[in-house]
Image 1 (cartoon, helix red, strand yellow):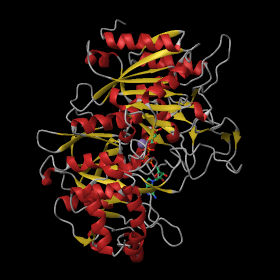
Image 2 (spheres, helix red, strand yellow):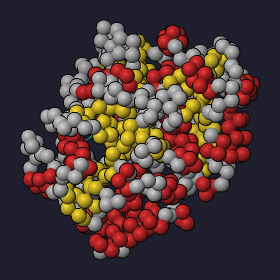
Image 3 (cartoon, helix red, strand yellow):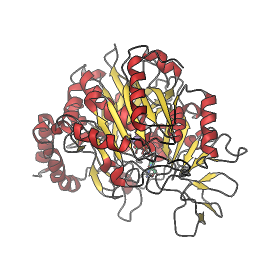
Image 4 (cartoon, rainbow, N blue to C red):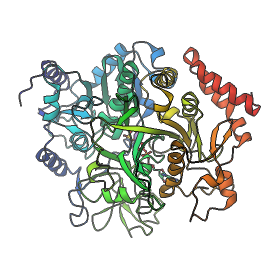
Length: 599
Ligand code: GTP
Ligand code: SPV
Ligand code: MN
């Protein structure tokens, strides 16, 4: 392959000099390359082929037990000024970080191949898309990037001789000395040696020591969210942790809706929802990331920058997400799932009856009653989006789809109602800024504790969170109010006094989407409350649900006492933005506090 882009070639040569790989391989993105890479991984014992009669062309991987999720405490935003990273990011001095990491990178690819992965986030040539190049020493990363992004020669052609690209430098941090046998999941098991570093000003990502998910597939969180959020701020668009769906009511006129939920809080589920209301149809555009730019019509147009789903496996079943299950029938990668006796994969809650025995995610003999989970709680599938039976025909439209509504939602057992409509753009930004969620296994941390997670971007915003919210407020002034998406706050996770989920969720979430579509079209009623507009009980379609009236009442209740209890926590969170706290958000909070007699 001849590389016409001199800066790209020189950069790869420089990295190769530092990392000292045995070989350099430029990825062309072909099916043959995928097959060859899988062959290498299979020979190394890393890729376990599944039963071709049950799941053709599918492979299982088991990670090192130290390397199972994103590592937020080892994730750094190395902006020149500490203040530009803000209170929610780990900051480190860029020069110091470069020195420290260079010391780790020296010779780190000995005994390995350096792969160069040119990729496009978004349809190649789309005005909303963006190109990156990831250097990695992990063939597992290569095959995952093949599924998750558009890889190869087409991207190099688009880049031409001098195009701009995001530079991603990744190593698992496990050099091999001559004759040393490789591990099936090479990584650096020492947490203090792992780094997921971003240099926002120079659009660079340096990742070292981990081979898992968002730590290693650099197109995803590092590029499409942390670096892209900075580009979006500079250029007047939005890079968000959101699914995108198309909902078509019986009347036939579709709406496109985006929704921000924190990790493992239901984006993939909602994006592929199978409606329980007759005549309603939901199709998928994307399940994790959404880039939105203003179109010539003054509306926000969204693309899914990815081409695959890196989805949470446990809990995925024919009951909770049948369309995901149908997507997983061939050509997929599974990580940290159970291997069953017939060489298939399994995870908790996939089926009502578990397999009688199997090999768990750590490679140990496992039975359902052994007291351990078979799959890791953050076990994941990597699946091509085109295989999703409800993928929308326009999912790769380079112009994107016009967004009618944006939902913000977290996992809250109490306080937050099922759905509330914002009064205005700035009120909606306020609601998004106070999102809280009980933590999940998608990142290292204390599962279940409540943390504020504005727009589900807390771990993914590449700059000061106060500036991020100010950017959102500014976006609302860039077009007329009737062209902006309407903003909503939702919560599928409200619990009863005896700890049941009050709302059936999953396919029944179409009932909330229906209310939202009818609000947009001016056909559904709502009650004004200090936190926004709540559905009147009869405006929410609960036909055929058997939902007890007191549960519905609780789901749609404005819980004054609960909100009073939340105010001081919100105030503390917003106060942590210091002098970058947007005045409009201060006013929104003061107004809410006044109306409910708090503060
Ligand atoms: P990332 O890929 O980590 O960004 O997350 P995601 O938001 O795509 O997560 P996903 O859709 O895989 O979330 C799965 C979790 O949400 C599982 O624990 C599901 O049980 C739960 N979940 C999804 N939808 C619902 C719902 O409507 N009700 C309830 N109670 N749980 C839900
Ligand atoms: C998330 O944690 O939000 C994910 C998975 O989507 S990962 O790509 O590993 O970050
Ligand atoms: Mn995510």
